[in-house]
Length: 256
Image (cartoon, rainbow, N blue to C red; front, side, top):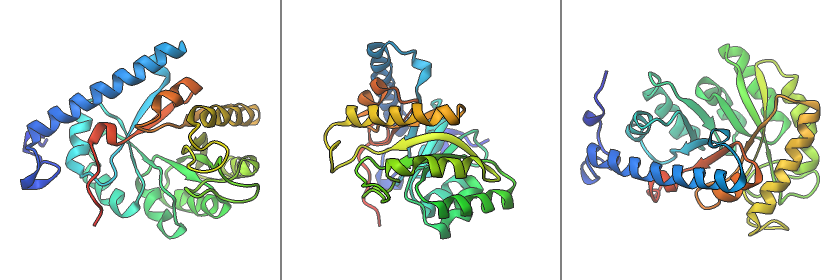
């Protein structure tokens, strides 16, 4: 078993050493945990009703290992070319990997090999491709319908996601697809449209869609919403999962 103190820092020779990086991550996690706990208390919710997913995009496997040592069990990625090698490097750890980015069908086979949950289902082609890939790997994939609150009927949002009128069709397709499990809904706070700058209202609207979805799909009770800047609004609205990156890992390095 590799000792955590033998793992390189996130910036190699120019970044903090592993002990310093671990302390940095621990302090950041503690602050995020306090924010979630305070938001739960303010909303009359139990802390265990909200799961923290740490978004590790642009950061190396060494950080994932440090986070695991600090108790993190859910991590998220948004690009397969980064996620696949990172998941392979951490295959010995008990982690749930969430894919949260816009997914191209030519990446589906790879994503299905390591992801436990795909949160960004927004079109039928993905359902078909993911089902085939899941059958090929013999794994069951949890799926969330990504809802775009800035999309007009029949269209997709600027940051991915299906318009609200397409939720039920996609949900039914997932529910009936081999190898897939309908877990619930996801959204990203929109930058345009009626909900721009109104994160709490956006997340409350997502909860309304979730309530409607659960009438026909009672097990689809996962609601993924909220990130570093707006996790409190998501918790107040009723989100079951928050996706936090920068507040835990720091300002992201530039992608090459």
